[in-house]
Amino acid sequence: MFKPARIACAVALSAALAFNPLAASACTSFLLKAENGDVVYGRTLEFALPINSQLMVLPRNLAIKAVGPDGSAGTGLAYTSKYGATGANGLGLPVFVDGINEKGLSASLLFFPGFAEFQDVSPAEASNSIASYEMANYILTQFANVDEVKVGMPKIKVSRAPQAVFKGPVPVHVSVHDANGRSIVIEYVGGQLQITDNPTSVMTNSPPISWHLNNLGNYGNATAQPAPAFVINGKSYPPASTGAGMNGLPGDMSAAGRFVRAAFLTANAPKTKTGAETMEIAWHFVNQFDIPPGAVRTAEGGNAGGGIAGYEITEWSAVADLKNGIYQIKTYGDQQVRQINLKAVDLDAKAIRYIPLNQKLGPLDLSK
Image 1 (cartoon, rainbow, N blue to C red):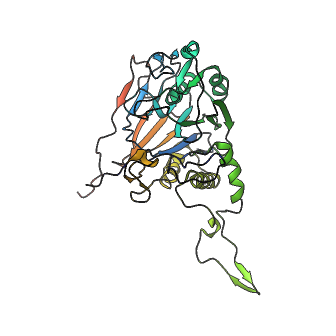
Image 2 (image 1 turned 90 degrees about the vertical axis):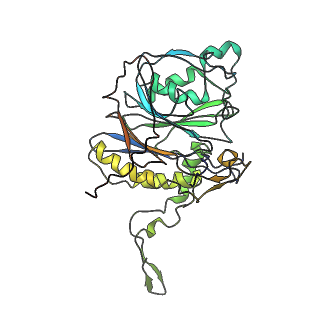
Image 3 (image 1 turned 180 degrees about the vertical axis):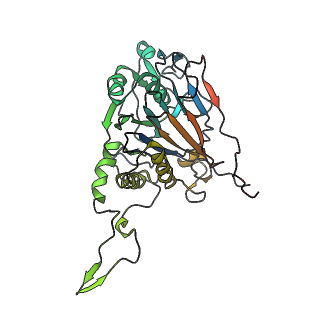
């Protein structure tokens, strides 16, 4: 039976931002808004190593001890969750890779290799620090909106704590959205915290958000409208197909290409009345970034795919309604959508709840 390797989440670029074939990747995130004020985001996750995600429900008033700068559990920042949250974890750890909280804030970790460089943390500062892969946990449990994130994140340190599976710091940046439809990107570059307002709401992987935003200027001619005919010597040659206005949009799986396509889709999304209707469109958008097995190969010992020989795939995709507290996810192994409603789960529980995603729900048989 075919067993593809998992996928890396980034296009590695040189320090001069010239394209470099060191790694492939494909995590993509975006936000959509309904006319009634509901806010919906979607994202895909691909990775080099098996993430083995579960759904996770983290309650309010839970005592949490972060990882210290040396990688030791419980030697970092000690804090208590203000807000309950749900989403997907990874590697069996009590940390969110992606999720939403009860106030309508979302946080998504996206791979950021080649650029992520976290802060130096002295032993005296260890008790005010978290590991890079704990950022979504901290954001979702401590903050209610983007403004609070902007004020709160500079007050703590994010260390270069090694993670056992990665054998070093986990190079990620964070895409954050709130229920008011505002978006920011949190990045640590050169050891410095950078929080960038993101009017596009879109995020992928390396390079930093500032580069992606500037790169959009190269695609101002792209349009969802019918393309005009080409006219030469008085003779008109109209396009033979709809969609010709999109000529020039990148079709590759690079982070730069996916950012442009996601920005185009988001900018041209049809108007929707409710969050439920918007979630349907978000799922169709998410599908545009699903990597079919065989499209992207990884090499044994290479930088892409975690050094595994095989094919990149989309391990899972998620869509969430921030105002209504609904988190949905589907996996590579089963395209049936699973759902958690934050208003229906116990956010005053005494421990984290883990819900496996390895069930084979399968197709709905309508034969009889």
